[in-house]
Image 1 (cartoon, rainbow, N blue to C red):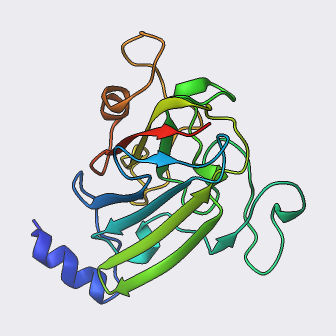
Image 2: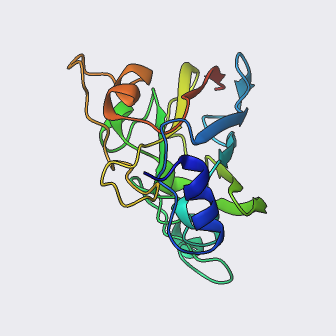
Length: 202
């Protein structure tokens, strides 16, 4: 039986992909800061994430750089990416929930595909760091209200060795009508749940 060390060696030689593990990803949230008062009129606030993978870049699910947005900014050069609620076409393992979401499936709606900027900030043989940023351009997430953002990376549910299994809508595991960290964990994660509770300014 091959040891995990043996699997690493084989991966270096290009023989196979490493099996992904439940603790292979760490999500850090830099904005909004916990307790902050963000934006003006429900817009102009940020969600800024660093996603650190202890796997080769090919297993992160990353499909390309993006610089995108609504209307005329949607999926255009130089770094096209689609812009809509649901699974991010550039980082398809990412799940982002906002408790006060007023579109789609509400607090259970994955809004990761609304992120505007995705890039690679560090790559080594067996690790990769990606940054993902979203500037909220419309008051679709509440005005003059408390809110909470959750971010995590879904587990490799289909066993293909790639983190690309985020849901478009997170199942409400406990049936209470609200999706939060408990529902994320029930779905199955490869990462921690990054969380920030803050106030969206009027």
